[in-house]
Image 1: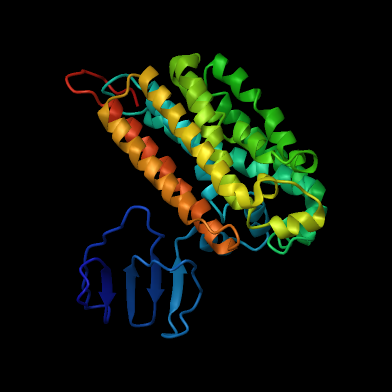
Image 2: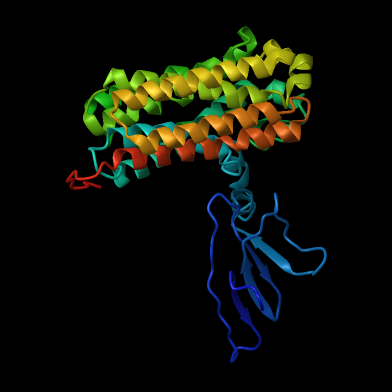
Length: 367
């Protein structure tokens, strides 16, 4: 009862004590601890959630993505896991380049178009799910042989390839509905990315650079966000932004690939992690320099102001620390560093947002 950062309801029906909630940015979702006598909400920092607390014997409800999926009806859960709804980091990494582009395209002094941010968030969720479905359909036999992926719905037999194909059709249909809300230029541009979405899962069979193809795919929103606002691409801004996003993907997905390098060797698939091996850090450092350079060119061409470059310096420091402290032989550290890239993307969005809010500029926000 001494913590003022919680909302607490205790005692009988006639006695209720309430306290305010403070949610911290970039923290895990709150967990709800329930017993017969009390209900409390706290900002838990645990990496995972359990249905029961072993120490207190109280029921635990979590607002984490994994817990939401686990609380869904049993027949639906395999499909939610197929689209990786329980692991939202991929959706974030697909969505964030869209937010950068939308924010850069905003008129000076204006906030980004809220409706467009929402629309692209929906599209990112659907297209990430579709990409994962395609990936698992292609990789069913490989996934069975890798401990981390053996429980995926198609590999484990929970969902057949035909069921996955029908589900994929539904996701792509909804994503098409989102795309059709944009202007004609953006519709054509968005449709052009479908080839990358379909062929990316095959790249690990034929090249050590599948992460490059993923970068070309995942950062298409850096082009699409601008065109959705402006009606076409300003290539002096969009191309360096897209290039920077591709370099970013090479960084975080190479780190991610180091989790599976032993299994990848066994099943015969390729990755930049296997190509770079002990030279991973010099390669990642080169990608980081290229990324920051591209973002600097983007800022100059988009007439960004000092706050953008201040945040860009923070992003550079984050990348340097991430690479310097990375242990490529510890999967848990690779996962931790991989997930931290969400914060890099959010920082950059904040930098663009503040760098675009120029003083003494009148703007009527159309969101």
